[in-house]
Length: 215
Image (cartoon, rainbow, N blue to C red; front, side, top):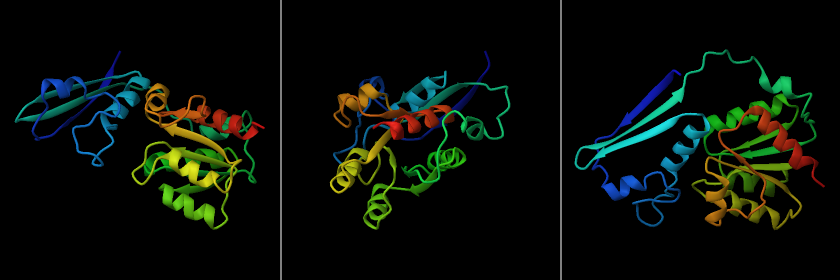
């Protein structure tokens, strides 16, 4: 089939063979403690593989590194409003409030737009501290939809803090990393509701409805 190739090249120090071999490993980083999560390339790899593509990395010490991403070319059109078409299957209600906590603007806006079209009321938060402030001021959602890995604090830490005063809060996590990687690292418990990125609007609608309907 036909693919679209995206290449990104830097002029850095390059990678040794050992580092190159582990470049896509979750939580692997050459940075000092507190300087990085070691999740960047792992997330890229997850996105690309789930999209049916592949990713290659080339590096030469003293010269730099090139990352090449191959994604299947799409020939179809994009529906005008996929979320609206799904509203009958997984309907939301305006009295059901979803708080989205996501530090990536594009991802947050996409999810918010889809959830509003499904019928939900939506609160958008760009980080955990904004979310905590909103909850403390009385904006308690029906469902907290939060990214797992964020700069200020993890989604798990956010949920733990909110549940000290709202123990029955319903939660749905999202991440670009596999469930095995997140659970193995101890970030989330086994059995936690998790929606893996990239997700479709259908998957988002179904998962949100499932968590909200759980008694």
